[in-house]
Image (cartoon, rainbow, N blue to C red):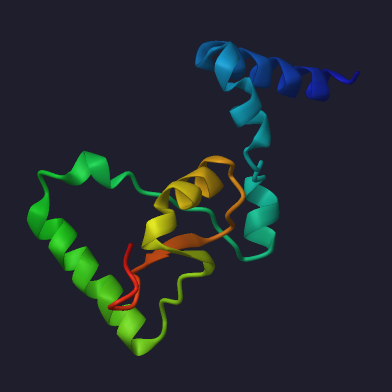
Amino acid sequence: MSLRLSRRVHDVLYCLQDLGIESIPLALSMPFFHPLSLMNQNRAVFGVNLGHLWHEVDKLRLWMQRLLQGVAEGWVRPHVDKTFPLAQAGEAQAYIEARRNVGKVVLTPEPSGQSG
């Protein structure tokens, strides 16, 4: 094993050790993104934890207005992987937890007169 590969394996194992043994399957199922190949393809991976911004109501409102404007104008097009009726919310949650979705999972309300 080359020194470079050995270093990468060491770093991954060290990271997994910090996560705890129960997190290893989850960590191994996560995609790996190499920043240079993403840049060469003009792609990016980005995420925001909105839970850290609950005290920033004005900022969140501004961002949400801009996103909704993008949806209305068509330059924001979220990918919907699968839809579930609201009555199947448990199945939708299991689908997400199994990490089967590539995109959004949407719950749809039942048409009026078809509940229960």
